[in-house]
Every structure is written in C-alpha cells, then in structure tokens.
Image (cartoon, rainbow, N blue to C red; front, side, top):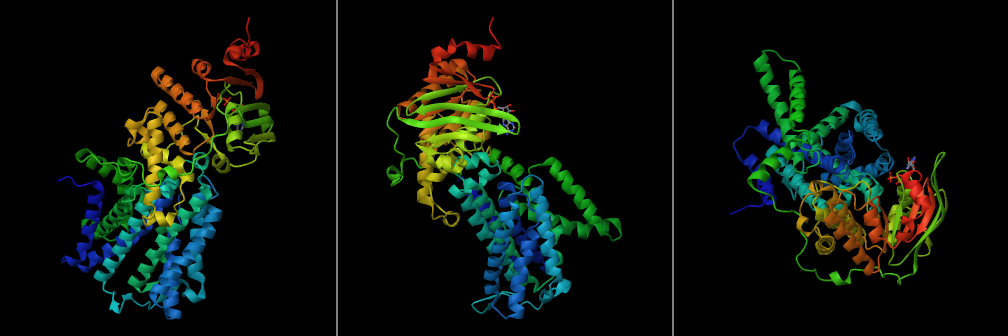
Length: 597
Ligand SMILES: Nc1ncnc2c1ncn2[C@@H]1O[C@H](COP(=O)(O)OP(=O)(O)OP(=O)(O)O)[C@@H](O)[C@H]1O
C-alpha cells in the first residue's frame, strides 16, 4: 500500500508522542521538552522569514513576553495560567502589531537590524523592570493544571508541549495551502507582483509578524510553567540568533524543517556538551566552537537546510503526489462567481492624455497621449529605453504619473496604486517573470484569483475555506487549460521554460478577470509554434471582448496580431497607426535603424 508523503509526515510526528512512554532517562525528556518549545518558535520563523521573506533576530523577545505575562499574572495577581496564556497572546499580538507596522516597512538589511534593536530593547526592559524582578526574574510560577489534573510532571508537560506544536503545525500548513497562504508565499517576491494581484502586502507582512509572535508567546507560556521561573537571559539576542539558526539548519522555507532544525541544534549541542569533555579530558566551552564548525559544514553541504535534502531523497523513492489539486468538475456555485461585464465593443476603455513620468532630471515618459477601445489589440513598440515599461507602470499603478491624466472606464487612475487598479479590471504580466518557483503552476496561477475570494486567514487555518478554495482552484485550472499549459498543472513553476513561464503569467492575469490585459514582452523566449499559439489565444481573448495592450520587440508577432500600434522614442510618441502604416513610417524606421539613407 502506498502511503502519501503528507500522511507519513504526520505519522512520524505521531511517534514523538510515544517518547515519554519509553523507559528513557528524565534528561532526555527535558531535551524533548526544549525541542518542542524551540520548534514552536522556529515554526513561526519559517512562516516569517523562510516563506514571508522577513528576517527576524528578535523572536526570543516575544517568547519572553509570553513567559513574563503569565509569570507576573499568576504570581502577583494569582490568576489562572490559562488566563496568563490568553493575556500573553494578546500582549504579544499587540506588541507585534505595533512593532511590525513600523518594522515591516523597512527593506534590505534595515529590517533585520530593526529586529535586533527591538529584540534588545525588550530584553533590557525585562531585566530592568522592578515588578518583573529585574535580572533575577520571577520565581514560584505555578504549574499547569487542567480540570484539576496536575500537568507539572515533565513527561506530562512533554505531551502538552508537543500537542501545542502539533496544533500550530496543523494551523500553519492549512494556512499555507489557501488563498491567504498564497498571498503570504508571494511576499518574498517583493511588492510589485503581489500588489498587481490585489494582495495587500503590508497587511500580510504584519499578519505573519503577529502569527510568528503568537507562536513565540505560546512557547514562552509553556516554558514559564515548565521551568516555574523566568529571568531575562533566555530571551536575549543570542537566543534570537539560535532560533534563526534552527530554522536555517532545518530548511527555512519548510514547515517540517522547523522541527528538524530544533532537533538537530538541540540534540547536537547536548551531545557535544557530554562528549567533548570526555574526549578532550577538560571542560570549557569547546562545544560552541565545534558546534559552529559543524553548522558551517552542514550549511555548505545543504545551503537550503536539511529538510529539502531529505525530501529530495524521499521523492526519488516515493514520488510525491501534488498537494494542491483543483477539483475535476466545477464546484457548487462556481457559475455564480461574479464576473465583470465586458464594455460594449468599440467603447473607450483607456484614455491616456499628456501622461508624463520624470525620474529626477530624466523624462522617461514625455506627455504621451493615446487611447484603447474595447476589443482592440494595441501594440506599444519602440527601441530599448524608449519608455514603454515606464508607460506600462503608469497604467498599472506601479508608478504614479508626474503629470497628465490616465483614465480607465472613465475613472482617473494615474495616482492610484496597483491593488486598486487590478480591482478595477486591468490585469498584467511582467517583462521579467515574477513567479514563486517552488510552487506549482496551479498555485501560482491561483494567486491571480486573490480578489475573487474572501476567506480570512483564520478560516483558512481552520479549513473552513474549502468550498471557496475549490472554486478558486477550479478557476485557476480553467485559465491554465485556456492558455495551453494543462499538462503542467502540478509542475513547479520554476522548472518551466522561460516562454512557458510568460504564458503562466497570462493565465494568472486572466484569473483577475480583466477588461484590459497588459502584456509585457509575452512572446520573448517562445518558439515559433508557441508564438502562434499565443497569438491565437490573444485573438480569442479579443473575440471575447477583452482589450489588450502589449509591449513587444518581436516585430513579426506584433505586425500580424495588433490592430493598432503606438511607437515611442525617448519617452515621446513618434507615430501611431495601423501596422502596415507603421511599417512604412519614416520616423519609425529612423528610430529603429538609427536613420535611413
Ligand atoms: N525607476 C527608474 N529610475 C530612474 N530611471 C528609470 C527608472 N525606470 C526607468 N528609467 C529610465 O527611463 C528610461 C525608459 O526606460 P523603460 O524601461 O521604460 O524603457 P523601455 O522602452 O521599456 O526599454 P526596454 O525595451 O529596454 O525594456 C530609461 O532611460 C531608463 O533608464
């Protein structure tokens, strides 16, 4: 009987629960408890750093917030530890929301530096506040009990910790395989692509920041009632760095890697602590040095962490089945999904008048004026650096116009952001493809359906979004078949040829249900047959009432496909007309050939 990889992972996780029933020394149980506690924090880091792309060195501070909140409330106010848990989660969520809303705006190395800054601030705060016992901390924290049953025994706490870890794993895995999960996975690709799909990147960044803090806080709560005392030391920067190391060693982009990293780091460290003094005959902090060397060697061997290595070997033995699959037939209510009414053929869709974009002294788009009507295919051409992509960016809201007006269906859009514009009905593809390479074609295309669903992260984590999810996946699968990529539905997008990746982007844009489709060099990298298929697809879209604006360097492709051409040079429009007229236009020939004899 073939067992699915997913079931196998949970089955192996289940084995950890047998551990306390084995006749193992208490020390091992203690190690198991710490692995569980660390895994919960590391899981949050995988979500935040590995998947969301936000590096944080400050997670230990949130562990401290959870631990100190429950410690203080249970000792000073005599409240139940369960209220302490609730309070810890609320305090951590508020702190993370506040810190996150400031921090996540930072980019590059400023973000990790900021996490170091607030991690240190919270650490010193714990150590200096009188009511938290300064650096001595709080002791005498009561043990956990449930319905009068004492949970203080380490083996019982082990069960409690691993149950909490199992719950977090289940919630995170559910969340990631959903509409909000795809939005989270898109974050690591920068802002432009997700926002063009209607994803509010700032909101989702704060969400993962809060979720990671909640998991850290839960770990802190368990820690406080396991240790029965808290002091600032375990919540310092060194621990923040260790959590990050655990995530990196396990595989920072992989949920199950969180446990593997915690097992490896904790297990290895404790073994080295025991073995090295015996081998070297003296005590000292040698394990830190050896440990560091081993970690460096390990990362040289497996730069993406251990989990992907193991998964790759396993995949060879037992090829994995796709995790995300679209339903074979349309789910109930699929036909009722709202679809935008296409404007009457020939009516004015896009009106660009005197649009200008200046980058300092450089005028990239100089007072451009042209129109697009419903059901028209318009080509925007010009030599390299003419300003075509900048013009595209003005229409799609990636850049605001410096002056002039752009109207879509009568409404001004020149100062609106990309999210607002895609919502109004302008879909786009990119000159340099923006995909999440490790996700399947289906999952990448489904990102375009973000605005077609409403499921919240909570409903997704609890799997209450399954009906809507089936609809979105069915919609994505339809678009994939429509563009001719049906055979690659479950292939990782990163392993497609470049030309196919461009076609994938068109399917993703179609999921946004556009009235106007903007395609940036869609034929680049395609073979002749693929170009013909693409041209057929674009004509079919036109027949369905869609309008298309495309930037393209392949003149044969453009001339045979477009109804009208707009030619740019040095930011200005130098010609406009039918393809046959443009072919013989002297200004155009001069622009392309650098002058005609
Ligand atoms: N963000 C920016 N900051 C400064 N200058 C920019 C920026 N984006 C584009 N430019 C400049 O604006 C001009 C037009 O660039 P743009 O990329 O729009 O041209 P293009 O016609 O799309 O070229 P290509 O066909 O090579 O893609 C170029 O001189 C470019 O260097």
